[in-house]
Length: 198
Image (spheres, rainbow, N blue to C red):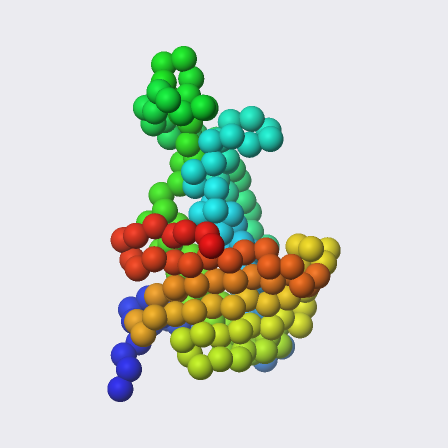
């Protein structure tokens, strides 16, 4: 008998507690909004992870991580973190006169925890049929095919492919846009390790 990890159990409890006790129509709308919020959260967390070492952007300076303040009604209130982390690396091409380099203020371990929670939340919502998502897979690897694709074809999400360990930790994520382009392709290391982009 497989035991459910505390993360999945906690996620189930939070979703169940927050769902309204109204009609099935409002329930499905609420689940659809949560699914959209979770997809957005995963995309923003993925951008943070992919740019954790980006010290130079076209706008100048390091990548500015996304911070999700709150989510409701299918969207999230997001701000950018303008406070960098300074590392003494005098030979780095982006070092200042004192030898310090500005890095994005990103804690990869924390981002992995947040991403894993969002991935499990997405899996649970899809299993309950939120937004008519088609869920295919064997439990460890799943394909989520979305009926509602918000945004232009290159940005709208057509599908997410998620792979989990036996204890429900995420090990891989691939996102495909409505236009068929792979827009994210990550392999996650075991907990307490960093995430790497393939």
